[in-house]
Structure formats: C-alpha cells, structure tokens
Length: 115
Image 1: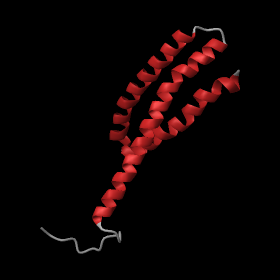
Image 2: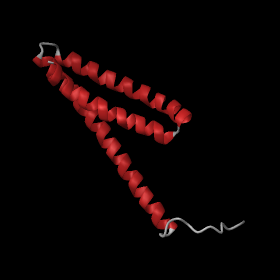
Image 3: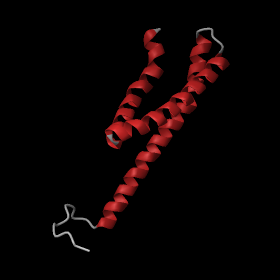
Image 4: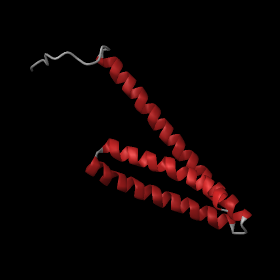
C-alpha cells in the first residue's frame, strides 16, 4: 500500500476532523428535524385559525393542510433523490433549503399581506 507523499492540508489530526464533521452534521440534522417538526405541527393549527377568521370550517381546512403538507413531503423526498442524482447532493440540498426559506415566510405572512 503506497503512502501519499503530499502533506495534509489540515493541521489537526484526522480524528478531530472526523469528530468536528460528525458534530456539524448532527447539528444540521437536528436543525432540519426541528424545523420540519415545527412547520408540520403548526401549519394545520395556523390554517385552521385563518379559516375560522374567514368563516370556513377550521377542522376541514386543518385536515386538508396536513394532507397537503404530507403529500408535498413525499413528493419532495422522491424529487430530491432524482435531483441529487442529476445535479449532486450539495446543489440539491441548497435548492431545497433555499426553497424552504422562501416558502415558509410566504405561507405564514401571505394571508396577512394579501388580505
């Protein structure tokens, strides 16, 4: 087995690099999980509140919002796989996170702005 004669770019030992990467990946995963939980938990309640204020059936609108949220999640999971295969994991992840940063404020502030 040949040893690579080039020096490593990093000054820290590989164990520290691996540990730091693991911690960073875990924090990113935790943030994404908490964000998903927060949005999926509060969207039906928020939609029910908006429906009640506008005279609609809050229960029906909350159920519909929950179903649309889950159908969108499944479509997103499937679409992400194809996007990651085509463009790479990092670009696909950046597109999904950017879309989330745009869609979530529109969801919550759209009804207040539009009417």
